[in-house]
Image (cartoon, rainbow, N blue to C red; front, side, top):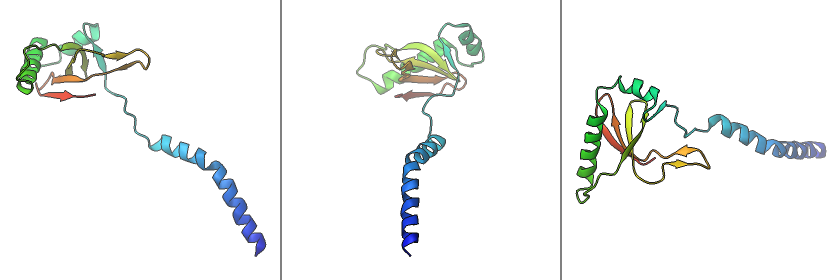
Length: 127
């Protein structure tokens, strides 16, 4: 009887030693990535111009749609101060002024008005 108790204790001791490793492996297998998997087209690049030709909505139309959307949601505003910096998949992204890129983490903040270049659907994203 006593030997069984010691072997159980020894087994527990060995498994607790590997628990952190098991947890790290499991969390890396089942974790979700929050990074974008879509293709980003930087404004005025060759790839940007090629992608823009696939759209039904021109840049001027998208800008008009975005500004109308902005003024509908901010009726007190007198100025529309968004800039187009990217096309992400099928969306023109008109970013809010301010910090767009974090040099330290190399992340872009795509907070702003997104206009789908194929459908004209407009949404605001706080990303």
